[in-house]
Amino acid sequence: MINSLQQKNEAKIQELEKMESEFERLAGPYVVREKQWFPKTIDTGKVVKVLELYALQLENLDSTHHDSKFELTKVLFGKSKKDKSNPYSMMLVSLNFLSDEENLQEFVQFLQKGTISNRIKEGKTSDQIELVDYKFLENNLLPLTHIGSIQTTRNQKNETLDVRMKIHLFSQ
Image 1: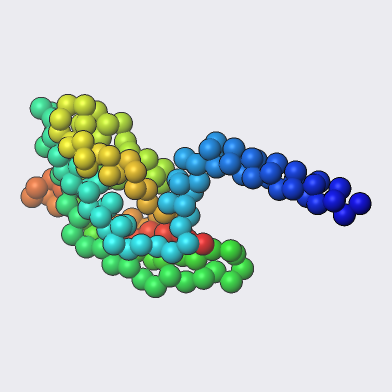
Image 2: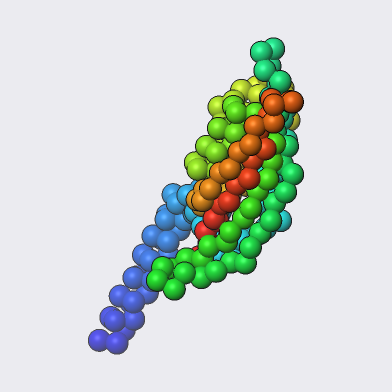
């Protein structure tokens, strides 16, 4: 009886290991993204690097019809605060930047969706965007982001917008 139970136990352990291996194979890419979108803690250095690199790419997207403008001037992080009624933490981030309207819309979509825009993808194809920068942005996602507020002031002299934005980043 004991041998029979031990054999059944061994068989179940092997079956479990096989299932775990198959799960890791199938879910691997999704688990990597999930860990970036909803990390245990927010790596502020990585967030700044992603924001700066995205800002630089927006600035590089000049065309014959459009002189692209985007300059990230300030990023300030608050403390991460645990939400007592929910299983996550939030961190307030204040951003200041100069932008044209097209790039502002694109930046907002980047924050909301967490994906690289078609314009930047096209910029990579037309060599306006360096492949190494594109790959970094593709492989390093921002945590889930909620835009709290956007304030803009139009600078008539150089046709840009002075933007102040408050966002919340989420972690586990």
